[in-house]
Length: 103
Image (cartoon, rainbow, N blue to C red; front, side):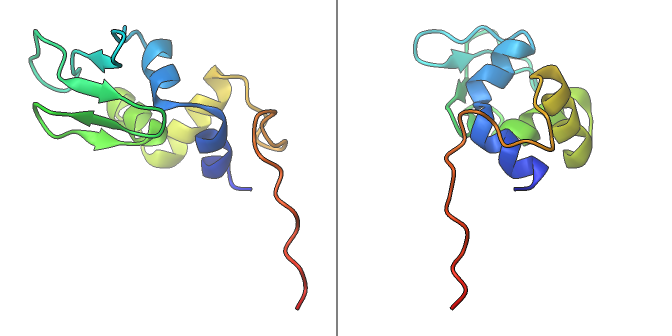
């Protein structure tokens, strides 16, 4: 499992937003950090974010990369560090898939 897959299976976009200071309302809406926003226009779902104001969108890695001006690899490494994920171990909440059968 790649680092990207580990991140995506262990961390939700909402968790990323909360980790980095966003305060979603009960509908998962926050003020978008990527444009001047006084009313919440960005939706944080489990697997993606989307801003109805500026169109910014992506997954947890994309959000981190955009927030901190990082490339995707740096963003994935930051998430692994900030959330205490060991890149060499599968996340505890990941679904264990059977190995592919040799056919």
